[in-house]
Length: 569
Image 1 (cartoon, rainbow, N blue to C red):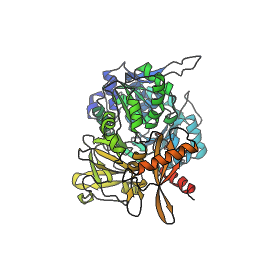
Image 2 (cartoon, one colour):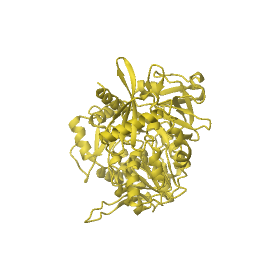
Image 3 (cartoon, helix red, strand yellow):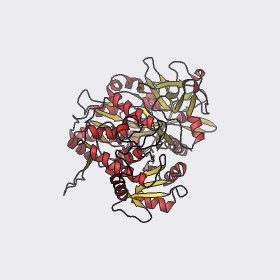
Image 4 (cartoon, helix red, strand yellow):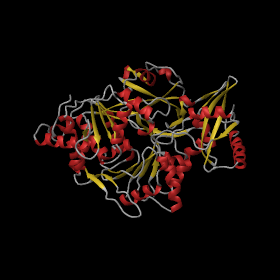
């Protein structure tokens, strides 16, 4: 089922790139992607942009070039390209040609990058010059990579093809009729569309296998969940999510920022892009919101064009939600979808419900409410186990309201990790009676009487004491309500063969020794107000928590635990 098909057969194809062709037919002259020109005191650079028709045609040329090179469907291609016009054209070209992009966070470090490439074994490597030289120097994918395509000016490069050369080859193939336009290989719904690597924040990065049907389900889920309409403008600070914008008919604005460091973004550049293009949708990590909300408030800025803000990657504090929500015009609000690389979206909740209701329960130790399950998603809560669970049984379910591991099933749920059978066995549960696979989120939580899902922390982060188990997010929510606290992290430290709970604290501002004594005393008073925090008696101040490379928001509690153990020797 990998034949090329033309326009008359387009409805029968299963290929996520078909959305782009549909949008190009409906809105040929509408802008699909804009890379704003850089601005300095002395000059303003020119914007670079593509209409939907131009993006469709450019990705057709690249896809035709891939086919003319003899690259077969389901061939894996590692992609290391900066966000921009080439990134969009290339991504859709790979989907169109049925080639499987392997997408890895560039900020995870050279060793992890090499490990991911060794695991994925791509046959094609497509990257900017720096990535190509790094691959040669470090030997990434030496055993598997057969062809290298460099994203650089010109049509030639030592021992490599170039993206412009690929365009030229594809243009010739289309002109000669060797490849038919629109270029769209018909893929089966279970054919692999992409391999997306997890951030590695709670273990080695793993490649989640995405099929074309999973991408299709995600596009439709986001469209319905947030009522996204064609013609909207998306300011997306996370490249992978940006690819949804053209499929949804939105104009995608690529902001001037390093997407691997959202916590260090220049707020003024985000404000300029927001104002110039009248963005209606903003996707950003909690770290980005935490960075730009105070700056906007200080400058008296508001964002009247925004219809919604979507933030994901880690729980966002009610304080940041409150501050950012004040910059929006009603009825706009901030949505916090829950999910993971392996399954997204699972549930969602808006800032109005959080700020008017659930935040108060969070501050009393109830965890963080992540909303009601998305239509079509089945959420179950099972007993907490660290071993594999091969087959589903209703006996795994916990009593209503009890904390357990969150397990999900539905059309957006991936079925496996690429060539990681052990990891797949630990994360997946087969349910033959319903012909489906359930994914174990590795998160702990519960469902309340209203059917809302509450997140209590990662399973691997729970602190097991002699007579009870403490859940990180439940404990931290109590302390995070203190006005001087930026965030906290609960870890377990072993002393004299006994685990003690330790609260690591990061303050909003650098605190003097006297201020720390006051804050510690007030935190201990807070601890006495909740059953989940009464055992917390050890508090350590940390200058800046180690966080993940993808969203700069997930706390590396494993590293903090080692640090805390050293402090308590």
